[in-house]
Image (cartoon, rainbow, N blue to C red; front, top):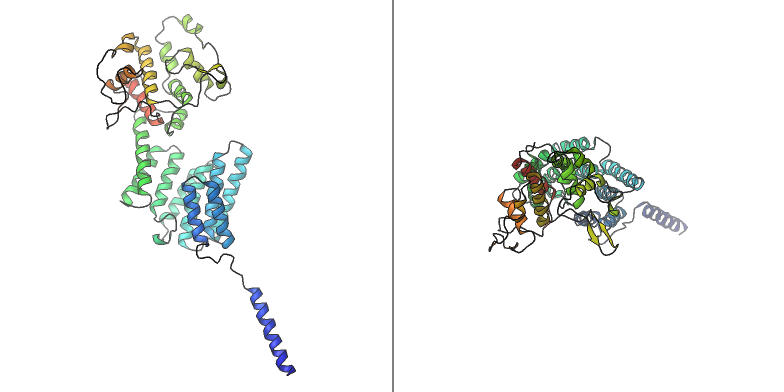
Length: 403
C-alpha cells in the first residue's frame, strides 16, 4: 500500500513539474492573436491613427513576444513620431527606438514573409527619419533584397503583394526628391497588377509626381523649389519664396527701373509680427517691397495689426491675381489690369464676370500660364499645389523669355 502511495506521489510531482515547464497561452480568443493585431495595427497606420496602431502592435507582442512583424509595426510607429517631432532630442529618441525595433524584427524573422515585412519596414522607417545621411541607399538595399526574396503573396498578411515594395520605394524616392525615379517606381506598380491593394494608391501618386516632373522640365529648381514642389497646398510664404528664390523676381523687377538710386530707396514699410522669426522672412520682405498685389499684409481683427499670415494657403483665384500683377510689373502694360472688364459671359461656370478674380483668371488662362479643369471649371477657390505653382511660373518665364 505504501509502495502504491509512493508511486502515485511521484506521478503527481512529475505532472506538476511538467505543467510548470509549459508556457500558458496568454491570448486564447480566436481573434486575439498576433497576426490579427498586426493587421489591424497596419490598417490604423494607413488611417494615421498612430496611437491605435501602437497599442495593437504591443498587444501582438503580448500574445507572442517573438512575433517579428509586431516589431516592424512599432518601428514604423516610432519613425512616424520622429518625423512629426520638432524637438531634436525627442526626434532622436524616437528614431533610435525605430532602429531598435528593426533590429529585433530582423533577428526574430522566421519566414520569407516575415523577412519581406521587415525589409519594407526598413524602407519606410529610413524614409521617415532620414538618418543616417545615406538613408536612401539603405532603402535601396532593402528593396534590392526583396527582389531576390521568394514569398507566397497570400501569406503577406498586410501587404498582400510584392508590388508593395515598389510602391514604398517610390515614396522613398519622393522623400529624397528624386522625382523621375519616384514616378518610374509608381509606374512599375501599375504595370505589375491591374488590380490590387496598391494599384489605386500608386495611380494617384504617379499622377502627382508626373505633374512635378513636367513642371520642372527645362528649368533648374533649387532646394527651396523642390521642397515646395511636393506640397499639396502652397502657403503665402511658400509662394513668396518661389517668386524670389526660383523666379528671381527682385532682380527682374529691378531691371525694369533704370535709376539705381530709386531701387536703393525702395523697402518694405514694416516687418509683420508673424514674419519676425520665419524662415522665409527675407523673401516676404522683398515681395512686400515690390507691393505685389495679392501678397500684401492683411489686417487681423484679433491682434489689431497687419500680418502677412504666412501659413494661409494660396487659392487658385489668388494665384491668378498675383501672377497677373507680376506680369503687369514686368511688361509695364497697365491695360492688362482691365482687359476683360465689361464682358457679359464667363467661360468658367465658377468664375462670374463680376468676380474680383475674373480679369486675372482670363489673363492667366488665355496666355496659357494657368489652366482650367476638363470639367470646364477654373476651381477658383481650390488650393494651389506645389507642382502647379512651379509650372505656372515656368510658363510665365517662357512667355517673358526669361531664362
